Length: 454
Image (cartoon, rainbow, N blue to C red; front, side, top):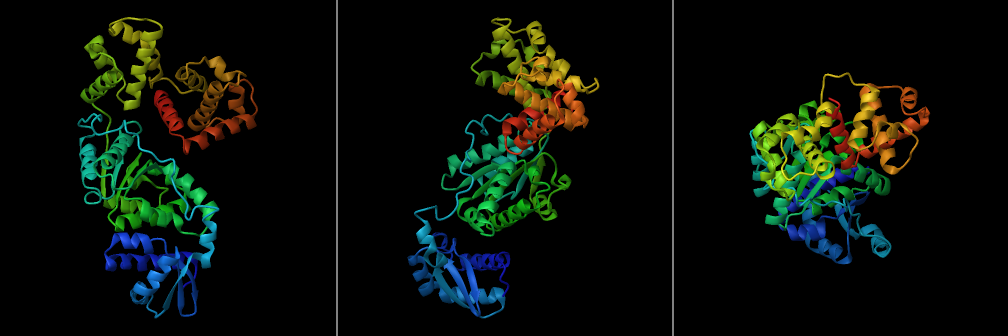
């Protein structure tokens, strides 16, 4: 019998799967079997660790023969099975010092504001909406996995959250986990560092997750070890008909840096895209945003709604940004009770110029667009002031300069007031690190790239 941790884990997983089928009692399985694992192989004896004296006593008395038969079927060898308390009693001693098992994704939380009720449905997203709604009503029964893909800002995350919120409200007994792929990467790094070869992360998913919702799966590309763990978890959840919903910025066939096994499994489910909203959908999104913000739709000329919807229809974030710019202008510079085309065009003139795609992209243009985005001046971006807001904008501009123009660090430093290349590198790295896990940073970079025509 192989004795590496990984091989023993895989064998015991197959044994547990058959045990779960045979006893057909999820409560008993979760209480006594779910946290067991092979501790060692001593000749013809397989020592299996269980949590607690009661579990060891019950397993040895009632289930030992069943487990022995199943283990023989799986391995082709007649082993004797012996259940012992975790690490010869060490688990009991550790309980006072640390939790019996690690807790994962403790910061996970759904966003109640993102529901099916406030999602605007149009021709561009109707199929994705219908599939998401069907999954929320019948988790694990249809479209598993469901994968939704699109460019940034078209509603993937909204639908993912809506599925979680609907299941949480209608079937509260089900355990929903909604995270980003960046969250998974971060959690796996902590897990691998703290627990090494232990398989507690997989066991945690077995007992704590009935519905797995994961956003922006493309962040797993190129991360081989993390993707391997994700595949083990994914395969186990799918085998037990636990609902999985995934979002991506592209079709799974184009996720070149992702394990072929994952891409294949993704494609076996239902894959749907969300397209850019048409004019009618964009107008309805704006109306909803106006009403949800406590304003009266009658205070806006219909032409204003059509104008903004038509000019900023690349994604929902663009629409929100244009509306926010208009409201900021009216509140701070030109107070009025009714917003007509004159006011609207004055308010968003800068956005229209920023979104033009005919001009050549330059370092100067990047600095100007970032400065406008953060309500700063270009001289503040390139100057020496180090307040947190200005420093953040400066680092983002440096990052975009490097990412979009591939400008050498030394040259970037010259454009930013003569800063040395080490300072520029540090600023770029800060943004790159934030992009892995900070949704606000991801949103800002996406919106700025859109303004720059990228």
